[in-house]
Image 1 (cartoon, protein in one colour):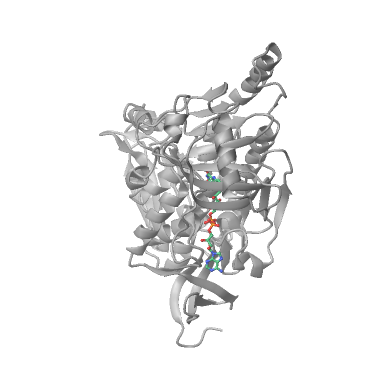
Image 2 (image 1 turned 60 degrees about the horizontal axis):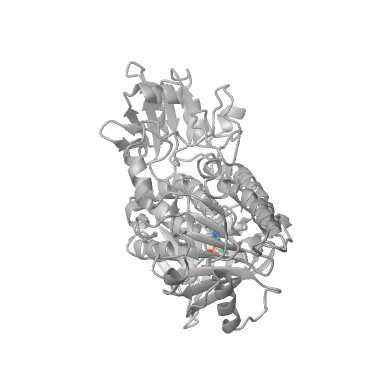
Length: 555
Ligand SMILES: Cc1cc2nc3c(=O)[nH]c(=O)nc-3n(C[C@H](O)[C@H](O)[C@H](O)COP(=O)(O)OP(=O)(O)OC[C@H]3O[C@@H](n4cnc5c(N)ncnc54)[C@H](O)[C@@H]3O)c2cc1C
């Protein structure tokens, strides 16, 4: 494959979903050209995930587009409460109160210097963000877009990857010679298939969120007139006849409705789906359907490997989540950010020969951790106690509603799992230098800021209300909290290896307290690689370690 006159790109990205788009944007950020191939001619217009978590928004902030992404979310004053009802116009069982976007922004504006994130979680459907991301990527000269094209074959030839693609509308073919291939091609992609990687784990079978499901994209502006309960972002109907979930997309009448199917290929007439929606509400309203998609819930699965040779995989290609907690795409976005700087280092020549292998070393445990947290949330959802009398206005009905309500009121963690969002750590990674301190206990629902090497650099608001994250360099950054520390040794070692390093002086006592050290070396993905009060004697060894050049270390 790949004739001598093949087209060339350092990186071929297969799949232009949220993860492939994020990888292209991050490679562009590091000045690396990519070829982005996607089967559909444009992004899908079917709603899926509505949770872009704090870390994903931090990544968008780094790329300079967080404000634009936030503008795609719900109207600023729309509440993001989750409400559980027997039916929306029946009894309210529980309500998880959550702030609107305006309230979040006010909290950010007045937050303490050591506040955990400059970018709180955003409720916004991924179809809006994907459309924006494709427009954005389309304007980047470093990205060659091939939407409406399919990767039909690829071969790792040792010193390059030959990629064969075909335009679906015309059957026209192109041969590309690329340095690396990144499979962001979802659950049924050609990259995982050719690598024969398999998903380990389980697919839960349970009453709800454990089997075939139907998502329907609905236009129903009458919804707001018909529903008497105070506004929610997510409405659940929980009763013995029917369980279902409605997520508000735009605050004006577009909704995503999720119900169970008996089989993945079951064809449910739209009139029946409309009846289900009205039964969930407890009122008749006119409904227009904009699309449907069937999917399997209950997956708690991670691929047995994430990379081989010059091929890497990210996102659903290596982990399958059930949408409890909104972790799936967000974990994939974080994969893309981890992979991007390592590919950039390889392409630009400053990465060591062992750097790319750390992609799997670092990301597979995070996928296992996040899927495990999601698996527990999914099981909790499956086990909601639903009494036969819960819709009856009787003492027994009242007891059953209280039991269900108390159980559902404990679901707050599903929607505010800050430990999953910000707490991913790369402890034990060979490119992280441990300092003998213990990392905070790993809790998916609680995030404890810590500069213990391996974790995300704790956030700080600097003087003038600048986010620390906006001041970090594009590549490695040495943060110096104590100006008397001499850092020339590390600067010289980095320069000698061609490793881009920026020095950032931060004179903020809270910063020194938070980081518990005078110096911290932060990687291009904002994780702490090393910290200390003084540079090590052998700065060259430190640079070699954090950039994956291990030969000298192990000899
Ligand atoms: C109902 C629902 C709700 C969800 N809610 C959330 C949520 O709130 N938060 C969250 O984080 N996640 C959520 N998820 C999960 C999230 O949707 C997925 O994890 C995410 O879409 C995965 O992104 P991806 O880019 O890895 O793969 P995909 O989105 O599957 O994109 C893969 C792309 O690759 C293309 N492709 C495949 N093969 C080829 C080929 N050979 N050549 C070219 N292109 C190819 C496909 O056409 C597709 O466009 C939800 C999922 C569902 C079903």
